[in-house]
Image (cartoon, each protein chain N blue to C red):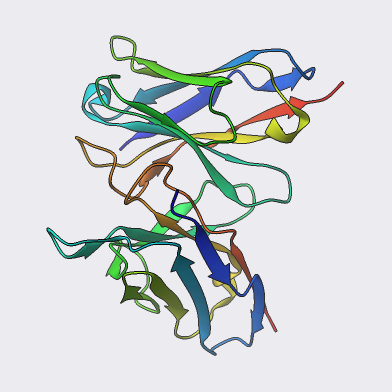
Length: 122
Length: 113
């Protein structure tokens, strides 16, 4: 049974940086692509980024491109999201997620963490 | 980018009645080489992570009640709840996973009338 646990959320001022982590267990992390998906208060789900199983491919939503960096450490079964130049509109619950199918990321998202809240406020 | 547009934004349906949610993509999500539509439907309840209900536009995920069904192809898709139950009150999202960014629709809120 896949288990994803996010951490690193909190309150941060606009323009500052914050790093999120997601520890995975219950599956062979190094074989699966991983996503970050977020939900701002009162808003819908927003796809943020994806990283391939080996870290060689990364794609971002236009809203975070150039400011956020997705990465992974397969030795530690950990996914990261480095967020910089944070804006008020980045306030959201950030979910770590996986397609639940090994290989590439052209699959629906089967596995989700519980999410971590990031609040960008002065 | 493939933009997903859902309709309606919200709907209220009586218990036991049918609920229908539509989703349109700005370009086709049908991959011709395997004839699969790269379209999923999710249910999202407050305080919980989303749950995938339907993948490949019409394949019900394991454990999902058969009152949930998906249909459509190319750019137009539908999620149908054939007989609404109290536990189905939630937000529902379509998502294309044909190409990055794998965008979600804006969501549809389903309530009991």
